[in-house]
Length: 446
Image (cartoon, rainbow, N blue to C red; front, side, top):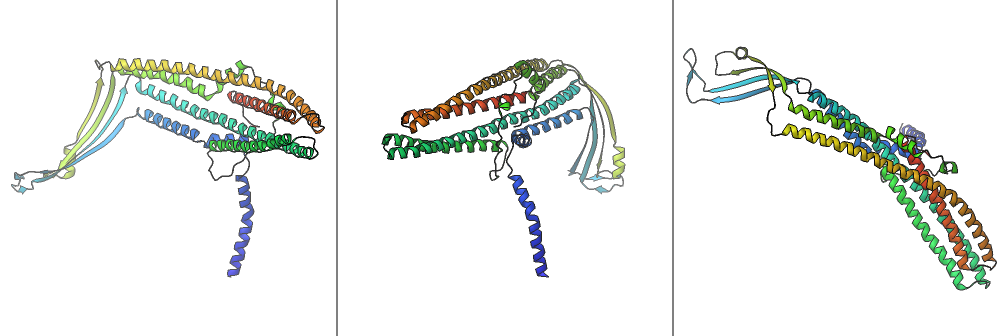
């Protein structure tokens, strides 16, 4: 029987193992840009913090709505009384000098009129709650921008590493060729040493490039709030020229679209509306407040000959009241509140203008960067082609003894610099174009 159990457990484990392997492969799957953006929009701490703020604003809204409804409260008081003087009942019998007293009351109240303060407060909370929702969306947009920048930085660092590795291969090939030429007496020891030193320099550059790539991956991993022990890598897509040289929308179109679709701008407009309502709320403090109250109370004591429930019925008191409170002189509190609310409303409008100007400045910079980077990319392509041909010619001439080591290294560096310039222009253009897409509410992907 025991053997059957062991065999069954083994079969079950073998059946589950492929599924576990599949889960492990899925968790270790390389991240695409779209996947990273979607994940960060839901899991980033800044986004979650903004979501908490939105929940708090919704709680405040519910509380404001509840202020329209009557209040209801119950209170009771139980006390123990002592007396040194003897007391007698109707039968001339001495009674205890210790009495237990109890009182009970049920009260309700409702505000009938407060100058529109309550309903304006509700409207203000509704606007603030809606604005908080847009703030959550803006936080998601901000993290989308950050993830895009970090992801493209990884791709740029990876391409830079490839250039460094290519440079090392060229250096090693040149050093090996130079060693043969030195042994044949075609070049000096100094020339050989220069090329060997270039190999060491390129090896160091690879170490530096790998470190830059690791740092870029770490930055993206932190934006995604991933655990330190979790394996992380990204997909390295090939970026075609069509993506680098994609059409650029006119500046006016991008800015106009951003004003309409960005959550930040919608939230800013709602802030102005909420500030205007705050002025109306402050004005209500100058108006009378009308409220109604009602209550019922009773009490009992052990010092009475009446039964407990009889006492409660006999001592029942009921009341209904209407109160009016009219502010006359309150130390300029009402006037100060109104003036403060007006200044805050003005400040909100100035903040809205500042936000629009900041947005325009950002979009203008991105628009100029995209145009400039595309022009640089086209120019860098031509420069790279020329530098590659020149380097090949000088390499052949060096092998033939027609060029010296300095000229060879110079042409090699020109070729590598041309590669670096092309790469930089390429990713500057892609980044600017992708961020312009964000401001036009277009999805980002590679």
